[in-house]
Image 1 (cartoon, one colour):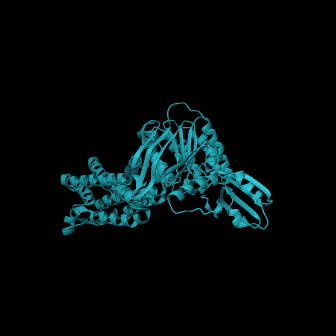
Image 2 (spheres, each protein chain N blue to C red):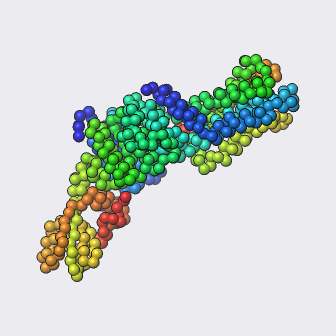
Image 3 (tube, rainbow over the protein chains, first blue to last red):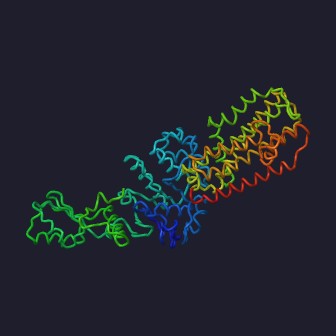
Length: 321
Length: 244
């Protein structure tokens, strides 16, 4: 991570976007520093897409100001310093993949060799196919190629690996790491939390248009505070377990007890003090997914109808994608 | 790269696409040629002007106008929905280049189309005119192409792909019918038709052949329509900037 001290690559200053009565983005303030790889996380409708649209000058903020390389986003993009890929971006039909990549490269002030770009995006094998005859995953890779067709300093990707299979996704991130190693700043929105965990050195969690958490993956996990504990206990006493100190959630399947707790030590001691001898005890930190759910659920609870009950098994069914 | 060369690169790609599009080639090139071959030797004369002249203007205009209007409106509407316009806005290409490139491509491809029908008129239909008359007729049709291209931008940016087809059919039918592109319009209907740009374009071509003069009122009507449609297109593009 190279912080060259040239000021932020991107800054949002109290940015809001209002659609009629709905506030899609609500007072967002943040900076992206040079060389960072930042993941933007949030449930559907959290304001991720609107934020990226405003950053990419597709929409204007209702209030606040966005700066990119010290100028307004439109001029930063027109100077070729940004490579971007959006879910909603379409391709020109009736031309071949190579023709399309060549066209977009020719629009750049500092184009990269078309063959290099295509190899990097993994589309060289179908370079002569017509764009309108591609599969979803292939289309996604062509979109990525268009984002990196020119020499740029900031890459913005909206859910880049959707529609990619596991192998392609792995290849994609290997390529991306090479791009970032050259000093580029990367901002990506994703639904795959393990991607954010592995690829990002900073995570922004947004919900209802507001920034809820901003930190390294480790900090985000810590911020959720809780640990996950599981053990086997025959003839479980549910009322007793519900009264355990630090308990956040409880799930019982036959004799398998799964607990989310703010204080794993106190919880475990209470079980032992009560004379129980559970087996196969496991204690682990929450994964990013659970941390993410905990952070957004806490926000929903504070600002709306309660969504988490003590019985709810945090995890699978509450997770976004 | 300057923004001009980017726009030209996009226009070039648009031309490549159009040349690959069978539907476009059929309606804009093949159909007018076939119809002209069928009708261009007509011996009928009406209003002092042989029908073979009329068919010449008609076929050259129909091909050029339908290409400029139908094709552009459908594509712009579809490309807006597909997100191609959005994708282009993420590149260093200036925001207005998409529209400018479409119009450049249309106008560029229309020129040879008009020329082909005129060559047929000269060598198949036996129409012998001085060069300046051919030039005025070609320019008039070409100006009409611009009018329809501008209207196509307005329609394409306003309507979604599902509803755009019937709308452009009705609009085109109106202008081609009252413009006298299907048959000469006379009498009371002619008074009404005089207000349309298409009628004035056909009239301009007829006047040049018959009398060797042009009607400035006619040119005025054509330019007013052009200005109105350009304004409409500009408004439609600006108004949908956030909905792309």
